[in-house]
Image (tube, rainbow over all chains, first blue to last red; front, side):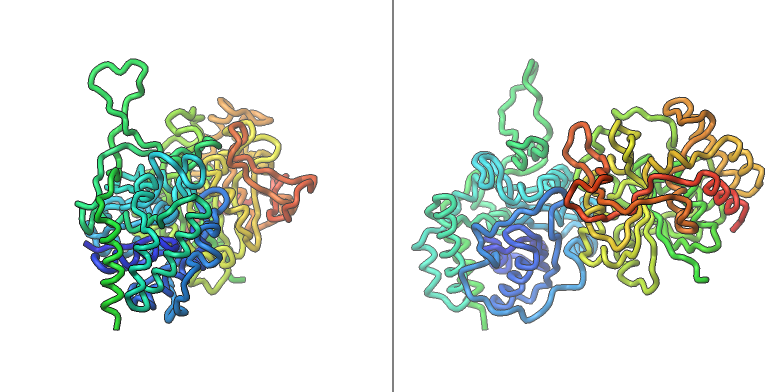
Length: 316
Length: 318
């Protein structure tokens, strides 16, 4: 299976890029605003590709959401979006194509074979689905890091990626494409602690750079959210396609709240157990539109760290 | 004089159809393509209607590209189409024979981006439907805004709306897209709202003159505008009976004679939140806001000139 990663690097996006490069046929990276401006996230993707010696095309994507003002993740990810490590200057430029054009071209050329992994705001993916309705037939599926069934990180109930562009997120979730969704409630349980980060320092330049990034990320998450591990949010989206035994998923209907000022950007996940027969005042459930991640396996964090070491070890 | 190049972005639609015919037949205009968008009718019918009209006036050579099937950010209109009362202004299929021409494979937004990327001459962009395609092009190409020298769009209203008390259909149908277009900073943006189009009514008598021309365009225009007059008289009466606005056509005649409308350069923004006011063009007529003027907003139109221009062009055949 071929994979295109649409992301906003981003510390945990960087780990997702390496996790995909280690285990999957990663054929392209597209970028979107979010953790920082799209200029920064694109630059970060190119820098990481150089350091990790990944010869993967990168296309720049959307600079702002479909509606409303842009979010700025700088409080967590720093002024560059990937503060904390010295990564080399890019040794190449992005493609002339826009991210949306690249998504459409690769999906058209790999009908039924391309998996789209989205670990940032869903603006590019929503635009692609709007511009080319056939995309929903061409894609093998979309796997997403975003949303939450419980606690949020931007508001009490909304997670950052979905809050960045709630309209886009809902367009993607209701698209009819097979969707895997892993939310903050799960990825907060996939965190690496200081010891785990330190273990990467025995490796080469790439592993040490990722350790620097994760140290910065952990310090941010400790300061902003009071966490004691660095959540590896974005690589979680790739787990079902690398080792399904490392994460359980269940069918659910998920929609995004867009109107309420209090709950805007909340992923409303229907996890009720409804009996058959008369429901009375109980609103019926809708047909599940996603596979929703529920529980990570204990071996997941070591598995992700191991991928970083493996990509590091193959550098020349 | 070199012919003026334009692209029409339409939701055909009876008034779009009149605009398409004017642009396709006027000797000083070169209509290089037509893109379609969800609006007056669903986008597949907009495309089919556009092809029908072009075929009927023997301009089936002009390529038609289908665009967005829904608003850029919303899953539907602010009120779902199924719940919105039809006024009968457009029907579904236009009253001309089915087309033999077919739409292009390329998507409207890709056509817009690629055409402006490659353009060496100025091409005016004339959107007369919801602005979904234009907003998508802005989102997908950071240089799109600077590459489009002039936009002349039909949409918006200052004094009163049509689909709601405060909003006009094209802006209301995709307010988020419209907000993006008005805020984008295009070098020149001309907006032809209801304030102008409701002054440029076409009467039953002018329709009869169009039919008497005996040309395909004259015959078709009489049918399309005749339908509009019936629907307006029944559901949305104008200041005189037996006459209707032909909104979108006014945009295209402006390219030939700018004096067909009177404009003021003002700041215009689009309301995207209000339950009562979603889709309203908020025109800063008294310069109370901090926004810089971004739009030549038309408050008036020269009805006689407009009708004469339509009659003169519809006398022509391709």
